[in-house]
Length: 83
Image 1 (cartoon, one colour):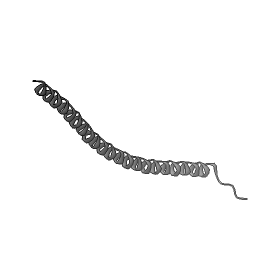
Image 2 (cartoon, helix red, strand yellow; image 1 turned 60 degrees about the vertical axis):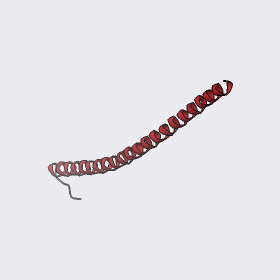
Image 3 (cartoon, one colour; image 1 turned 60 degrees about the horizontal axis):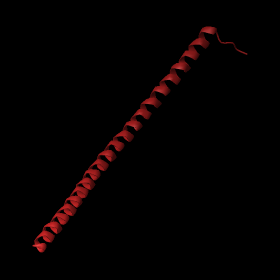
Image 4 (tube, helix red, strand yellow; image 1 turned 180 degrees about the vertical axis):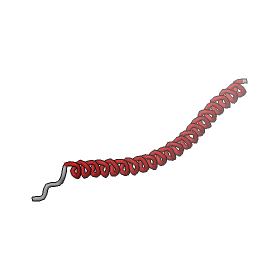
């Protein structure tokens, strides 16, 4: 059975720690890249939903204005009919 010297074991342990640390850094960079892509997709989706909400709000306002116009027209027609 061959025994390694203490300094050789320490060097091997340090190399393994640096290797694991490097793998951890690579994994974190890949995860951040994927997360960034997901956030960009969410941002685009959010902008699209915001645009649709503005369109829906405009249609709602137009509907309410049309309703107000009809009510005002009925009142004017009713007043002219009573005269």
